Length: 226
Image (cartoon, rainbow, N blue to C red; front, side, top):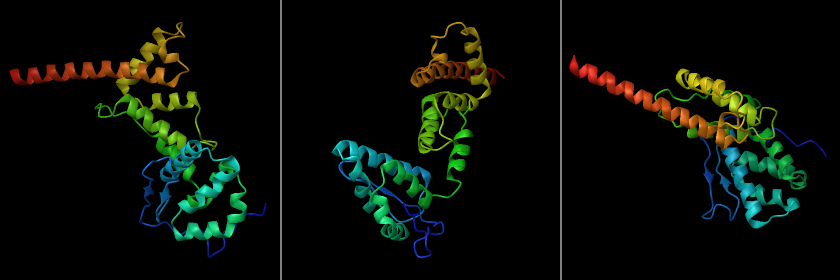
């Protein structure tokens, strides 16, 4: 297949200060969503991709007909021009190949590294303002954006990222539990099931929260007595 055209009339626009919006149909699976004009982020593209896949499943769209259903979802003029130039080649692709082509056109060249760095730098707040579940879910959502790329993490990689982002107290609790259960491979901390691992972290976090509350109460009591 001939390479996709990136001529001066259809090349990707310089980044806009206007970020696009994802417009969903009334029934989210009844039709493909739309992307308004503006700068495309990896997060926005991932949401659109998930909508496409849900739509295919809901409507039972045949593999060979999937891509042609999506091409009208993009409202940015530069994207529309690019699709028009490459339409013949695009409609002949399976969705995963189409997704790679559209990513190469829509997103910055280093988008994978940026998403991975953002995911790698996530931390569980020490003030407990975010639950373990929401913290882990945020990392999982970013990892889903990297699906199909070399930086996508398997279950083991996700667990390492999540543990690396724990605060000092949680890390200490985690290490104590892990050491105490080294011979008990059925313990949730060793589970291959991600949800069981997260439930164990939540129990550790709840323990830390309780200790934090006791410490705050004691400090307040001492302050009142002074």
